[in-house]
Image (cartoon, rainbow, N blue to C red; front, side, top):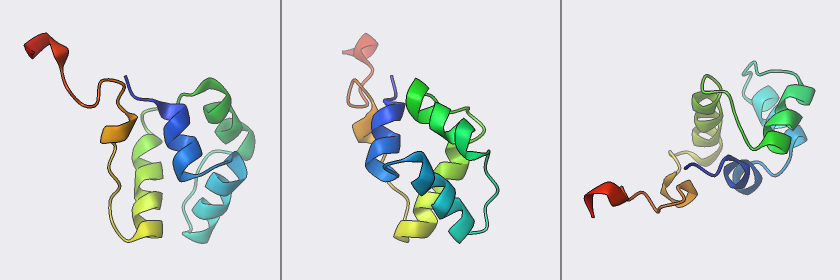
Amino acid sequence: MFDTLKFLQDNFGSPDAVVGMAAQYGIDIPVRDTVRKWFARGAISGEWLPVLLTMLELENGKAISLKGYLSDGGRDDIFT
């Protein structure tokens, strides 16, 4: 499974940082309370994950790796 909370904490740190970064790049995202719930629940709606990934690409100048956020390290044990 994807560790959403770790992804959010590692890459944004807080809901305020998500909102601030979105504002910096002129990207519309849900209100702060919704973003806070992403952190509290450890879950992001599928439609918003690509937006967050795009924000990180703009911030870092390149795409980030998601492999470290998979609980199985990206391997599918069914085939091993």
